[in-house]
Image 1 (cartoon, rainbow, N blue to C red):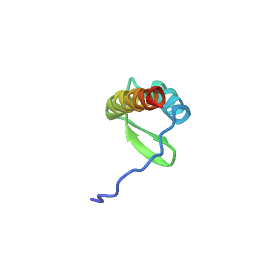
Image 2 (cartoon, rainbow, N blue to C red; image 1 turned 120 degrees about the vertical axis):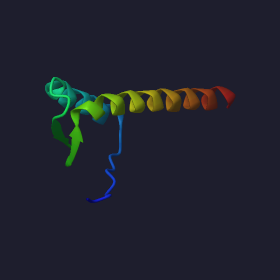
Image 3 (cartoon, one colour; image 1 turned 120 degrees about the horizontal axis):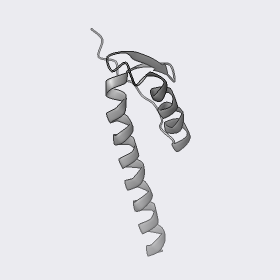
Image 4 (cartoon, helix red, strand yellow; image 1 turned 30 degrees about the horizontal axis):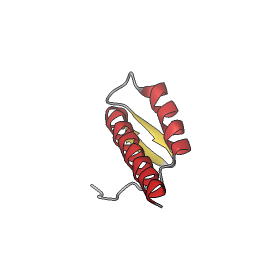
Length: 70
Protein backbone atom coordinates (compact mmCIF):
# COMPACT_ATOMS: atom_id res chain seq x y z
CA UNK A 1 0.00 0.00 0.00
CA UNK A 2 1.31 3.45 -0.88
CA UNK A 3 1.55 6.26 1.66
CA UNK A 4 1.48 9.02 -0.95
CA UNK A 5 -0.22 12.13 0.39
CA UNK A 6 -2.85 13.94 -1.63
CA UNK A 7 -2.07 17.62 -2.01
CA UNK A 8 -4.77 19.99 -3.19
CA UNK A 9 -4.35 23.75 -3.00
CA UNK A 10 -7.78 24.66 -1.68
CA UNK A 11 -9.40 27.93 -2.65
CA UNK A 12 -13.02 28.96 -2.10
CA UNK A 13 -13.68 28.25 -5.80
CA UNK A 14 -12.04 24.83 -5.67
CA UNK A 15 -13.98 23.96 -2.51
CA UNK A 16 -17.22 24.92 -4.25
CA UNK A 17 -16.37 22.64 -7.17
CA UNK A 18 -15.44 19.83 -4.77
CA UNK A 19 -18.76 20.22 -2.94
CA UNK A 20 -20.61 20.01 -6.28
CA UNK A 21 -18.79 16.79 -7.15
CA UNK A 22 -19.44 15.38 -3.67
CA UNK A 23 -23.16 16.18 -4.00
CA UNK A 24 -23.34 14.03 -7.15
CA UNK A 25 -22.02 11.01 -5.22
CA UNK A 26 -23.07 11.49 -1.60
CA UNK A 27 -25.67 8.69 -1.56
CA UNK A 28 -22.91 6.10 -2.03
CA UNK A 29 -21.01 6.54 1.27
CA UNK A 30 -18.44 3.84 0.50
CA UNK A 31 -17.98 4.88 -3.11
CA UNK A 32 -15.28 7.09 -4.52
CA UNK A 33 -15.07 10.00 -6.92
CA UNK A 34 -12.27 11.80 -8.69
CA UNK A 35 -11.45 15.45 -8.22
CA UNK A 36 -8.41 17.43 -9.29
CA UNK A 37 -6.64 14.24 -10.35
CA UNK A 38 -7.18 12.49 -6.99
CA UNK A 39 -9.64 9.87 -5.73
CA UNK A 40 -11.72 10.66 -2.65
CA UNK A 41 -13.93 8.37 -0.57
CA UNK A 42 -17.45 9.84 -0.45
CA UNK A 43 -17.91 9.19 3.27
CA UNK A 44 -14.65 10.99 4.06
CA UNK A 45 -15.35 13.92 1.73
CA UNK A 46 -18.14 15.20 4.00
CA UNK A 47 -15.69 15.62 6.89
CA UNK A 48 -13.02 17.08 4.64
CA UNK A 49 -15.48 19.75 3.47
CA UNK A 50 -16.38 20.62 7.07
CA UNK A 51 -12.70 20.85 8.02
CA UNK A 52 -11.80 23.09 5.08
CA UNK A 53 -14.79 25.36 5.69
CA UNK A 54 -13.74 25.80 9.34
CA UNK A 55 -10.17 26.60 8.30
CA UNK A 56 -11.33 29.13 5.69
CA UNK A 57 -13.42 30.78 8.40
CA UNK A 58 -10.45 30.94 10.79
CA UNK A 59 -8.21 32.33 8.05
CA UNK A 60 -10.75 35.02 7.17
CA UNK A 61 -11.13 35.93 10.87
CA UNK A 62 -7.34 36.22 11.24
CA UNK A 63 -7.09 38.43 8.16
CA UNK A 64 -9.88 40.70 9.42
CA UNK A 65 -8.14 41.02 12.80
CA UNK A 66 -4.84 41.89 11.13
CA UNK A 67 -6.50 44.55 8.97
CA UNK A 68 -8.29 46.03 12.00
CA UNK A 69 -5.03 46.31 13.94
CA UNK A 70 -3.24 48.21 11.14
